[in-house]
Length: 254
Image 1 (cartoon, rainbow, N blue to C red):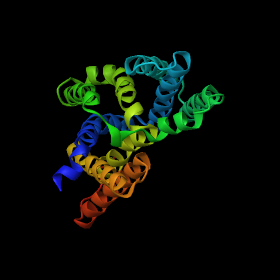
Image 2 (cartoon, rainbow, N blue to C red):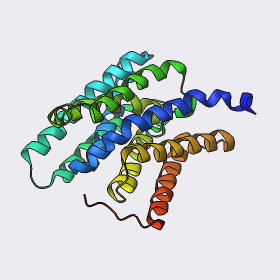
Image 3 (cartoon, rainbow, N blue to C red):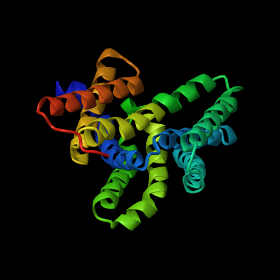
């Protein structure tokens, strides 16, 4: 039995590291009221991957990540300006940023015979086929996020949030896809932490459980991995919320 499923261990390990890295960041996103910003930044990170592939066909992983990080940082800078300079219509402006990124991505691959596949890959990712080589950056990221969340003073947490967020999005979007990254950031922190008042650790466990179930379902039933993980994470987070509710736990005001 183990030998039949042992090939999944890099994907499951990557899922655990992604959950540890993204759930605390998503908790902070919700606290700051900038939910749509993470989707916009993820879209621009994916745009960087596509752009690097167009400018340098056959570009290696490092070059693609560099392009992704560059555009993610541009998006982070734009979001930061919106948050700093605008008191109203912030979500609308960030929504426009997302729309521009998505449209540019479509235009970039429009003349590529494999453009539809490349575009789909940025949305759904390829988590099922994670390799051992993709795990080391995620280990560093997860450790950095845990240190940032639990060891740094609040002023440094605020100061480093957007740069760390850009790096986290860059390292996870190509592997997991925009949909999985967004769901990992938002579903468990929203349903378990912000609505039910449980800790970030519980949200991480729920998120990882969804990742593991979605990945297993994808492998067993030959389903697309990204959508499988998204549905499973939302289901496990919802079930955890209902279990808390059934025990009479009152939500903590945000």
